[in-house]
Structure formats: structure tokens, C-alpha cells
Image 1: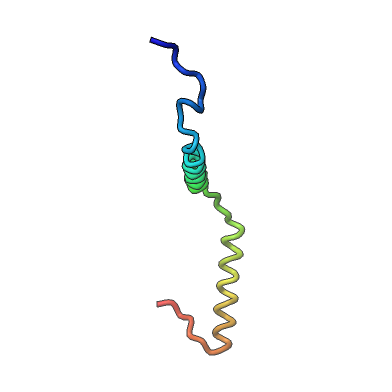
Image 2: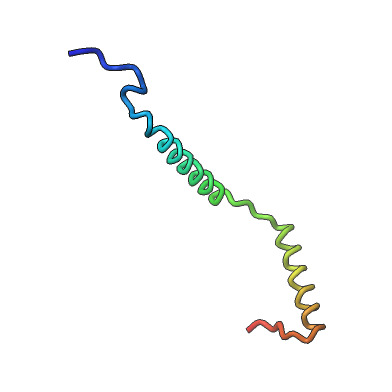
Length: 71
């Protein structure tokens, strides 16, 4: 019975390291997207500006003869 090997490259196939890196990077990316979605910021000022833009767009289209009534 010998001592366990402490050399990382001999115990792991070195050609698999790039694959492990890509998979780890993908998992990290998915984690960051998930955290970002859980902590999605609300922007009340931007919501007000968006509503104003919608009203302006409807008025513009009405002046051009487009029916913008919501059903």
C-alpha cells in the first residue's frame, strides 16, 4: 500500500480541465442570472416615464389617423 498521490495532473486527466472550466463558468453565469432575477430592481420613476411615453405615442398616432383604442 503506497501513499496517495498529491500531484493534481497525474490524478486528473489534464485534457478535461478546459471542459471543467467551461462547465464551471456556465454554472457561475446561470447563478448570476438567477440572483439578478431574484433581486430585480423596481424603478418607479422609469415606470412613470414609460407611461408618459405611451400616452404621447397614442396621441401622436391618433393625430395620424391610427386607431389605438385598447380592446
